[in-house]
Image (cartoon, rainbow, N blue to C red; front, side, top):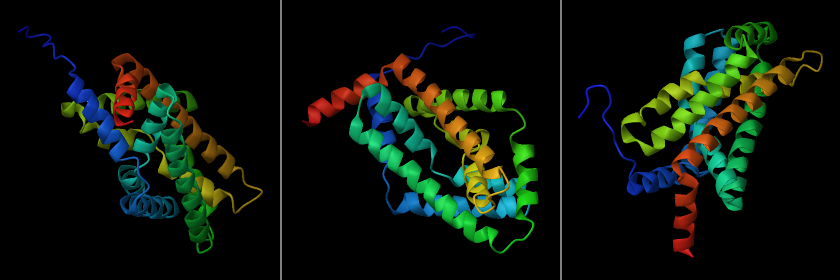
Length: 220
């Protein structure tokens, strides 16, 4: 075995396990709703108190990575049911963020100034933000295949900011003059796009979509 590189083959079992883990975590069950609501509250508190650590906590707690990765798998595998389920989970997260973010904004007068500062500090460059999202999506997808890399999901949650801009969009919607909602929503969509691109490329390279299709055919 070389000291510089130790080859480690990708077994079919690891690919099956990756598909199973992805599908298992893409379910709008009680756990999903509890984590989404908890992450939204943390993000709102982080924005309104100008607390970066609390915002980071909301990124770790938010369970949005799996629906986005499943969306990427559904696109390349042409699975309509998985695509609709993934989209539903993302849309319900947006709706909850808008509602809860709006409720929080009613009790804080200077929330737009605080949200603006947080927004600027967290998203200084759109190009690098997209690049981070693409790389993060690729690493997260790869982590599903390799158990040693699975712990990277926590790091991915921190690297890609999904919940803070989503909640900032919800807060910004309650001020028709301020364009915070538009800019925050754009960042949220760009991050999703980046993760989708990274996941689709990774799933295609390792043939995860073929494994998913084979599992579906065996279940018929």
